[in-house]
Amino acid sequence: MKKISILAVVLLISVTSFAQQALWGGSQIISPEIHENNTVTFRLRAPKAVKVEVTGDFLPTQKIDTPYGEFDMPGIAELKENKEGIWEYTTPEALASELYSYTFIVDGLRMNDPSNIKMIRDVASITSVFIISGDKGDLYSVNDVPHGSVTRRWYNSPTLKENRRITIYTPPGYENNKQSYPVFYLLHGSGGDEEAWIALGRTAQIMDNLIAQGKAKPMIVVMTNGHTQNNASPDETNRAYIPAMGGGPREAVASMEDSFGDVMKFIETNYRVKTGKNNRAIAGLSMGGMHSSAISAQYANTFDYIGVFSAPPIAAMMGASYPAAEVQDAFVKKLETQKKNGYKLYWIACGSTDFLYKGVIESMKKMDEIGFKYTYHESGGGHTWDNWRIYLSQFAPMLFN
Image (cartoon, rainbow, N blue to C red; front, top):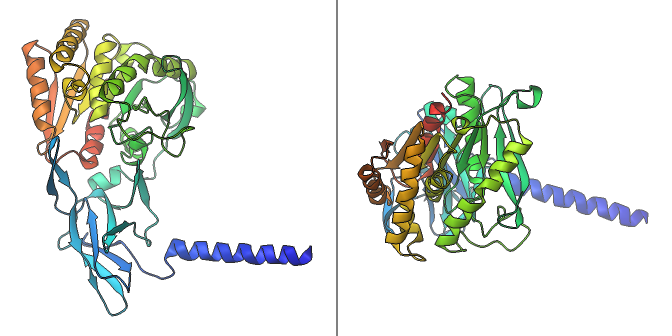
């Protein structure tokens, strides 16, 4: 028995040592190294590699053709090998303040930076990340300010006949007082889930910092899973995960519309929230922006604040299952009802090189035809998280005033 115990201890120490070496790469390589002038050096030890590249959103974008039009993709840069078998690349210019993601490509195989423990998951992809300090970078960072709480909850959806997972941000002090708060429902895009806005969107950090600066009112932020064919993110679901939009375009919209009352009922039953449309906001990116339009129109007297970020026209998303004209006409009728009921803010934002830009412009023309009032914000850039994070930081301060 004693021999077995000693053997177990030795094996445990060996496994732990191996794990530590894997974590730190077994060397003192610094990557990424952010220099004082905000240029950045990336390094990778790969003495047997033939070619090493880095791709990330800090590089100039390259355009690719998709069935939906031209899409901006991260650029690629080559690393150079030194005598020690360490490959290096330094950005030729200083990087602007921002959160950046990147991966290495080693002889055609993508891999994360083994010297960087900071990573973010975007459904099936995990990328290394770093932040350049400054205006945006500081907004997306954890600072010495009061912090809210982030919890994951399961709620019952009678409409979908299942339990589903949501992520909830409560503002600083929620647990220690008896105040009630307004609610902001924040929806992800077709490539996301209930974790997307917290991880890639930096929602907790943005809200903590905006509230601390007095730029946004304390509020509860609810982040749902917009794929009704999946009840949770891949690592949390209790069944086989179906890829994004796997349930079909019509199901992705209609079921989300029809079941959203279940989400609101759970929040208003289990959290101290202010009720009434003047205390509810909804916004989302891409598919989530489409959902925000559809949900706020279906529950036409429920939300005073609506945000639509880089969203496709609803007819375009549902046209594969239903005639586009039929869908559009039905939606316009809902918008007319929403217009009569009134709202305080309908905020539309899109990047000038977004592959959905033309669709956004077409949607606004339809709104103009019926006199539906909105505010439009156009930024540079495309269908990317660097736009959506800043849209959130611009939209949140306009809520509940």
